[in-house]
Length: 263
Image (cartoon, rainbow, N blue to C red; front, side):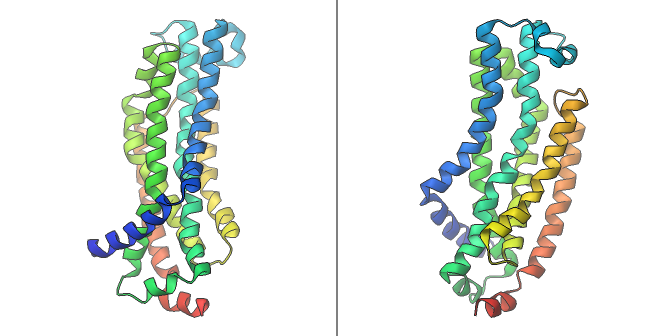
């Protein structure tokens, strides 16, 4: 793979993404919404000075925070449990960018000139994938930091420490980019085989189902957050899936077939 060609594809895609401010706002908005829900709950508990015994089933999870007073433990459980949904952002958000990067170019007839150049399929996929993944990863990291600081300022700085745990710092630096890359690759592969962006997004949207299942099962298992082992296993699984997607993508993104279909 030649870095110069990857960079050329990346810069072209990135200029188009940055020029679309509405798209960038659509990337940031879901992350802010996910973060606002638990932050609102933390604020509600803080303002109303609720007794954790009034919070129903959450009381059984407070033993996971033995060093915190009950009220702060309840807030700590809320912010750590909702953090699993940060993994949804890099899975959902870049899908629209990824599908548009192929189907949009099919519609505008701008894909043929790229396929007619000496750029290889792997280089084209790499450039498009990196350009589509960067906004979602950046938005997730930005909201993650904001989430930690805001909740710490609302209730107690110890909540910030809970968010910035070793497990979640590793997850943010490794698992989030990997999930984002897999989601983008899947979107590009699917969009290279279909002609409708809505169809591509619906098919590619299945990638979020396992993540939702993991988040829900985590809550009902009584575990407030992931362990380091779970994060590392997740990295391994998603890494393998990326490799599979690259192999399938190189086959699906056959330039001669695409040029024939475009013609």
